[in-house]
Length: 351
Image 1 (spheres, one colour):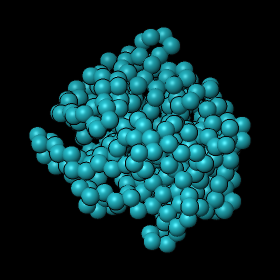
Image 2 (cartoon, helix red, strand yellow):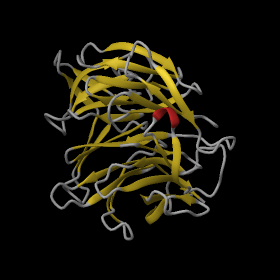
Image 3 (cartoon, one colour):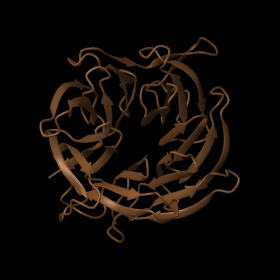
Image 4 (spheres, helix red, strand yellow):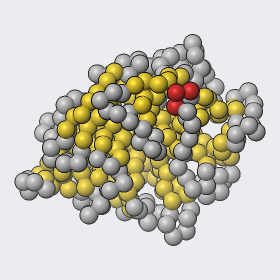
């Protein structure tokens, strides 16, 4: 097996081929001896160089993609082996979780030698001054205020504060985050936060919960509902905050759109599949303006026009995996927020 970073460009109504529609391949980078997982992007504020931050089963890689035709791996940090590794950024730091007991990996991205990083597993409780510990977590998200949300945490000592969501402040001291509180109603696989609202994906329950996190010490669950295929994997809110989009990580599952402008009267307005009847599995979806960009495992990177959320239309795709149908091979993650407009996607494995 091999892992591939794909650098793509979405060009509406231009690029059409057997394995792609309205997307051009600009470049690739391969790790021939490991499998990959999540991907995120980062831009150097001084040089404006663009980077792909890639999770691998055996570590973390930082790749300069400023020249898409010639990506260059700047550094690699070896870590405990795990299928799951997720990446987010705050300022000049990358934060990486894994389900191995490696703690929270914090990487200083101003050091392109990859020699400045920390594994942190103990965090000071801002309310009591005591120590809170977790050594593993499934995923994370960092909001616009520098609050890091840790999902599905565990501890090799069994003393983790929550397998739901742990709130850490990474703004005041990026390398020594402070524990602010937790949400404990259910196991959380992933979530997305904007303002004081957390869109919380409880995969085992098959539900999306809306949580008021204005008080991190006392979060309040506002409402929740079941998603179409009962395995709620991720969610992303629209730019105007009126719609949320969800994926269920199951064969032949849907991307669903909901009107959430009135939390007392949430309405599903549309649902769509990339390749109906094929058994393909959606994974992570992100809203980028009027487009929904999704990593769709064996269907690759897909783009839907959500100008009218009640009528989502697939307008582009790049199928990076040679197989088709049901399975968790192929495109694990995608990141559509680079200033260049390029989309970067991580292929979990290829043959």
